[in-house]
Structure formats: structure tokens, C-alpha cells
Length: 449
Figure 1 (tube, rainbow, N blue to C red):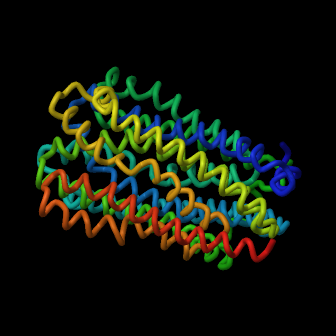
Figure 2: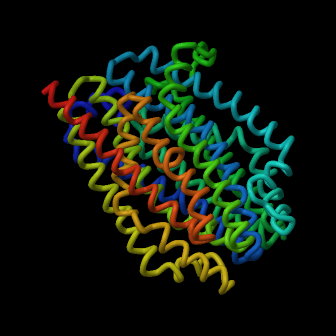
């Protein structure tokens, strides 16, 4: 599909066909991305040890915080790009790409330097103990040194999807998984670098993918490509991108804080292995969540374009189909977590106590997952049509309004189990809020038919 025809087909092609065309590659890419994270965890757990899994879990808040800034730029700008293409504002669309490069560079450097300067106290604050701090630090130092590369890679992949090249974005993600899978055992075992080897493999894989992305965006035959005069930050583009991207930013920021609370709660009531159990469970659940995110990414340019073109029937239809697909995926997560959690945990470790704790936590964590897909799609939908405030509110309901208070209250009564119980209950309450807001949005669409 050429760059000239891709935006046009978003407003005319069958919604079902478009969703398959855009979501298919995104699902494959996001599945590959989740496998990318799982591969590191599996090699570290099986090759370094159970405490290394706990050390890796300590780094999740840092990763979420980095992802928060990356998403604020990448997701915000790519959503804005879809809307501008729908409005046929190609000049602004071109400048968005240059601004993404500049913003990611600035934010990536500042974040990496600040985190490296205070890495030890930060990791202790995030739940590390004397037994796990060395694993967490060894991994994060290398990841933070490559932070700019990670931000740029994720940001340009989002731009590729919105510019009408979802398959190329998929190839970039799959490429990083394949390279990382090859390099992990090489650096961990052959070069005897342990957990540091996994981090080096991750950064190298993303570097190679970024080089390919930059080559794609250097093609002058494409309407949206790198050109002089587009890198200087423009106030309107930056403010609009950051406003739209504020929803995923706050969601990832809350995720960072929540993982800190979870780690601290599990450390207090269960010790280092309890944190490792959460690390394993989080990786498994993340696999299914990333598939839903892939479906959401497929929806985003379709919903954004048609909302910009005021074709509300098409917006309504793509939303319904996405909710159905997301619900199917999270129901599969529920079934897997309830019936085969021990089998899933054994892929990461041979430590029987860690397997037992992981399985017990997983069964609780996925209890409300059949409705989580609906909540995720609804939150992303409001972001896709540029309604940043509504998306931000929905992002915060599960994490800030419901989950954080429960993470303080439930462990007081139920100990370690209370930490796990807080998650499914917040899923239920936030899904009810999302349903109420979506009904109101449907009523607005009906007025424009």
C-alpha cells in the first residue's frame, strides 16, 4: 500500500478488513514484543537463578517510567498524525515526524542521565534488598545507557503504523525479538555475562531495528519522510502530541508507582521470592495484555482518521469489533492463569517454592480478566479520537483511584494475599466506570447520524 492511498482507504475500505489489515501486524508485533520480554526473563531465571528473577522484577518500575515518557511522545504524536492525515493536513503531518525525533532524543538523554545518577537509592526504593540489588543494578545500568535508542525505536514504530505501514512496524518488532533471542544465550552463557548479557542483547537488538527504521523514513518517495526543516520543535505539535500522549504517560507513571507498592508489599509480607513470583506472573499476563494493545494499535489509525473525517458510523463499528477481539484475548488469559499456572511458571524457573507462589498469585491476578479487555479498548478508544481528558480519567481509575488505596488497605487484613487481591477488584470497578463513559459516548455518536 502506497503512502498516497493508505490514508484514503481508512475512510472507505471495509472496517473489518481494515482492522484485520492494521491489527494483524500490530498483534504479531506486540506478541513478539511480549515474547521479547519473556525471553530475557526465561534465560535469566533458568541461567542465573531465582533471585535474578526477583532482581529483574525490581527493574519493572524503571522500565515503566521510561515507557511513560516514550509513550507520551510516540503514542501522542502517532495519534495526532492519524488525525492530521484524516484532515488531509499533510504539511503538519510531515513536521510531526521530525518533532518526534527531536523530542525522543531530548527526553531519552535527560531520563537516562538522571536515573543513572541515582540508580542505587532508586532501586532500593523500588523494593530491592541486599540480596537482589546487584542483579537489578547490573541489568538497569546497561538498559539506561541505551535509553535514547529504546525511546526512538518505540516512537518510530508508532509513526510507521500511523503513516500506513503497519507491516513494516511489525517487521521491526519481530526483528528485535529474533536478534535478542539469538544474542541472549550468546552473552549470558558463552560470554559469561549473566544478567548483564541479557541487557546488552536487548540494547543491541533495538539498535539494529532503529537503523532499519531510520532507513525507511529516509525514503524521499514516501509522503512522510525525514527532511530538513522538520526537526525544530513546533509549539503546537509538541503541545498537542503531549496532550494526547498524556493518557498513556499517566497510565505508565501510575504503573510505575503501583509496581513499587506491589514490590514493597510482597517484600514485606513474603520476601524476595514473592517479588520474583510477581515478576513471573506479570510477564505471563503481559503477553495477553500486549495482544490487546496490538488490537488497540490497529484500531487507533482507523478510529482517528474516521473521527477526523466525521464518519461516526465507521468509528462506532471499529470500536465494537475491537472490544469483541480484546475480550476474547483476555478471556484466554483468564483460562490460562486459572488452569495451567504451574506449567507457565516452570518455563521461568525450576525453584519449586517460586513456582508455587507464582501459580497462587496468577490465579488471583487473572480472576477478572474476561472484562479487562473491554476496559483497555475503551481507554485506548478515547485516546484514538483525541479525547485526552476522558482517556486520562479512565487510565487513572483502575490504578490511581482504585488499585493504590487497595494496595495499602488489603495487605493490612490479608497479608501477601491482600496484595494479589487488590488487582482483580480494581479491574472490576474500573471496567464499570469505562462502561458508563462509553454509553455516554455512544449517545453522542447517535446525535450525529
